[in-house]
Image 1 (tube, protein in one colour):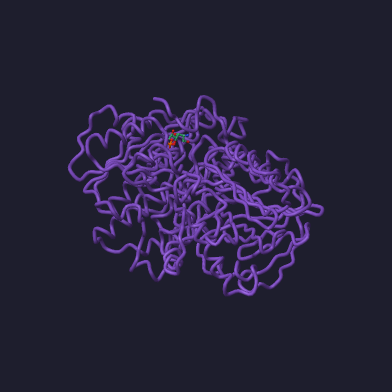
Image 2: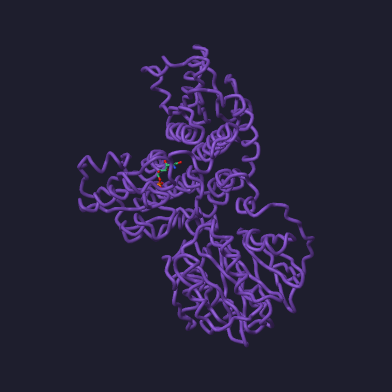
Length: 616
Ligand code: AGP
């Protein structure tokens, strides 16, 4: 995610802004910039690449004595990671500059309206549209605060935004809606930032903004005010004292990046849907899923998914939905096998390369092979501007924010969301029957997940204590839970170094069941779908051979667990059957995390592993 910092006080602002951006580097970024007001003039300095590029540019600026400014590190979602798309963005009339984190879903409609009124744009970003909208509103508003509020009331989506303007040279305005933003309260100085590490060296006293609030800092240094966005009523709020050290602050207070990224998944699901699922449910049938990146491409007659590791498991999971809702035959292959097989790709068959990093050598090679064979090559990536994203004929971004931990967690969740949306999108384009009911349930998924995660973590912790001594584990699933079983086994292997095998539960009787004994426990996924009864009998077969079983399941229609018995009966909340995987996935991730943490393993940097395998 992008990093935001703003400052108003008694010190030169620019060094503080750059220092704060360095403390936000862990969030991942591909460009950066600062804006400050000096002698009544608005200055903007920005650079693509690392912060060192920005510092090199600043070194050529005249002495910067401004005591008020804003800074930003950008993690690209709309628009390539180039300087022209870097923040801060100026309003066309130069009357203000803003930095922004999040996605303005209706930015295209606002951009069209502003263009019609003569506004021109130099970037592809939604942020520049917002800057111009504020400047436009200023013509009608009685104050800069009012103009800021009027513009934000028109923006839909998720944002954290900060703004400076020569009209009020010592003031920084900021606002949040579904993206974190907080005030750091110092002595005679104030900060605004997307995260505590940006100013932790200067103050531990913070004020957290709530959604739909505007902050104003400065106006003579050190002061801060809060207002309600919808009516500008003043808001009072106590400061909170942060006890974290810098290291834990980068992880939002979590012990590891992995657990932070697992717990971020509700927000990831919401951001993944932003701009793709109609904001107004009444438009579901009429509009359906919107994936403009693919509007110019034919719907493929067949699809070949190629990927590695967790991304392969996500592809295997998505294939079922692409066939069911998209009506398209799908094959899924491990990229390192596909690339050396000289595969036959039919006329009208497209290849979809799934890769969080967008740099995995085998997956990139598979994408290139598809293009050599003259087939359409699509990418599904998390890193904007990565090799696979650049070389694909079209790319869908998961918008999950940087995934720091080597073990992929929120990336898989976001890949599954996009694959589901892709299935609905292609299904609609092929005139298949409408499945918009699923969109209603998908909209409620972030809240459902948010509510379920704390209890899931507790169950995972207890189960981990009991099973961390196992030497081997089976993970069993059927249907959509089979790829999840593969993923659960991969997570346990790569984090705790305990051997684990994911298996299609129906395969147990064809050999693997010979391995079952009390020291070879099984993790069975028995979600309330059409495979539930079959899974119950698979579980009984394991128990008949003294195998211990952790069962991940959901209550039946009476809210009971029915005739399921297990050593650990892990109950997930009820939900639409097609979305149960989004509850099962974090449970599997949390179990492997808690086992690895209990065993004292290096959770974020497991031995022998790299975040992106850019070699064969
Ligand atoms: C997942 O936890 C692993 N770190 C690994 O399997 C990873 O999914 C695989 O290397 C593919 O990476 P990619 O998604 O960046 O292509």
